[in-house]
Image (cartoon, one colour):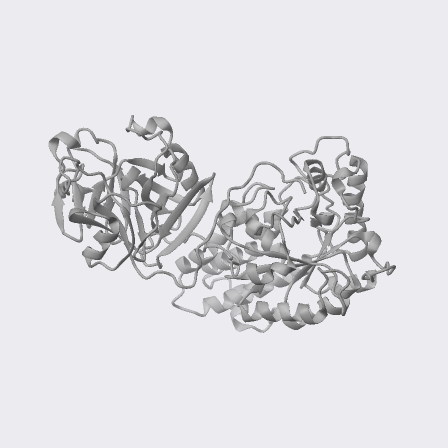
Length: 612
C-alpha cells in the first residue's frame, strides 16, 4: 500500500491541527512506533566497531557491524505511510473509540518493549509450534536422497496452501521468539542452504508465484562457483534480495564440514568474513547465520554472537525441534524437508496476546493447553465463565458436572472438605455457590485455623482473592461487603502465585505438606484475565509449581484440594492418570470449547548447549 497524497482523511489529520489532534496523534504514534519496534526487538545489543579477539572469552554483549543502518530506511518510511492510511480508515469508524485502539495496538507495543533478554527465547513463544523446513539443492534429477525436484517442490508449496499453512519470514520468527507475539495460525519458515543454482532457477520463481518468503543461506566462496553443482552468482543474488520475499543468511566462507574442530581464528574468519562479504556485495545487513552441517559448540556460538548475528540456524537429524523449543536464538532448530507432512499437522503460531481490557474476560472460548515447564507436566484449561458447584455429597468431579446441569466444559476439584463422614459435603470454611444459591458458613472451630488463607470471591464480572478474616467473612453479608455482586465463594489452601509472582516458603504459614511432592490442583486468573483451572500430572511441591505457573502466564493462582483429590475434567473426560477420590466441591468453567485452536506443548528450555 502506498501513501495517497489526496486522501481526504490524511489531509484532515495532518493539516487541520484543531481536529481531534490528541486522538489522531495517539493512534498514528502507536502505529508509527510499532513499525520500528520489530527492529528494536532485535537491535538491542551494544554495537562495537570491531569483533572480539578470537582468544577472548565471548562476552554476553554481541558485536555487530552497524554500517548499513540506513539501507532499509526507505522501506520503513513506506511502511509507516501505509499504517497511516490504515489509521485513516480506523478514524472513519465512529464506533471505534480510543479504548478500542489502545486495546488493539497496546498489547503488541507492550510485548516489544518487554521482550526477553537476548539470546533467550520468550516463554510464550515456547508454547507455539513453528516448524522451520530445510531444503538443499533443487534439481531436475536427484543426485542424493535429500535433493528435491522442481515438481516436488511445487507440490510441497501446493500442500502448504491446501493445508492453510502460512510461510513467514525469519524476521517475523525472530520477533516472535523474543516477544511471544502470535504468528499466523499455522506458520512455517522455508530455508534453502548452500546457494545452489537451482535456488535461483527453480525456487525463486516459485516463491514469487505463491508469494512465499524464504531464507537462503550462502557461503561466499560458493557464489558463482559452478564446479560440480551450479551456484548462484552475485548478479542473481542481487536480483533476489531486491524482492522482500528473500532473506539472505551467512553460511560461512568455505562451508567447512565441522566448525567445532577448527582453531578459533579460523572460526572467526568463517563467521566474520562471510558477513562482511555478503553485506559489501549485496548492500544489505546480514543478521542471521546458518551453521554448516548444523555443527556448533559453545565456542562457535560465542564467536557467532560476537560477530553480531541476531540468530543462528542449526540442524540435527536425531533431535529435530520446533523453533520455540530450541536451546536459544544462537541454536534455532529445523526439520528436514522430508518431515513436511508431519510437522504441518502440528504447526501452531501461538496464543493471542493478553487483552488490555480493563475487566475480566469471561466470554472467550474454553481451551485446553498441555505444557511442560521446568520438567513439570501440566494441563491448563482457560476461558469461559467461572462458577463453583457445591454438591449434596461426595462424587468424582466428572459425576459432579454430570449431575449439576450446568453444561460446564471443564472443572477442577475445589476447596478442602471435612473428613468426619464419608458422604459429608461439609467444607472447611464458608462456601457459597451460584448453583445452589446457598451460603453455608464455616464452623467456628475450623475458621480460626484458616485465617489469612485466600478467600476466593466470584461475581459475573470479576474474581478477587483476599485474605480470609474469620470475623468478617463467615456471613453472606460479610462477603457481600467485599463484593456486592458475589455469586460464589470458598476458602483455598494457599496462594501459589500472587500478583504475577511465585510465593516464598514463608508465605505458606506452615501449611501441612506444602513443600512435599504431591499431585496438585489449582485455579486462578491468567494474564489475559481469563479464569484458569489446572493440575500437575506428576508430583510437585508448591514452591516449584508456583514458579512454573508464573512462566505459564498466570497472574493469580490458588491451590485447591490436592493429593488424591486432584482431578481435572475437560469435555466430559477425566484428564488425570488415576482414579481421583470423590469430593463435594468443584470449580468449573462455562462456555463453548474452541474448535480452531489445537492444544499446545511447552518444552523446558535446556541449559546445556547441544553439540552436533
